[in-house]
Length: 121
Image (cartoon, rainbow, N blue to C red; front, side):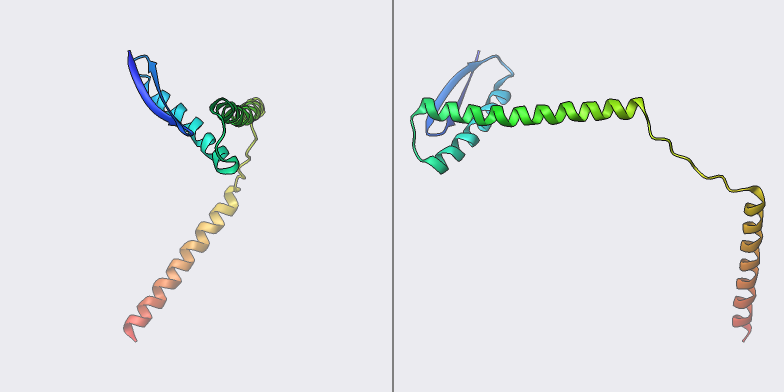
């Protein structure tokens, strides 16, 4: 069994965990310590049980808000999948496409004439 050392607030801890879970435990402890540091920065030193309780409650509040956002995003995704927005692509009538191609050819021919006359002049 592995052991992980970390600090939360103003106290050092060592906790045993399964092999391979060290990174997750350190990350969780880091999150709890960040909350504890905010509390200590605002309220100063306080008893360890109260500090851990307040830090845990702050994390639980943040987690609850994230869960609410995830549920709302999942609902929106389900709604979009059920009723996908229709995208209509306009179709250019063949006569208009032919006329535009003719105009483009004429413009290219005029440009070529202008270029040729500049080269000669």
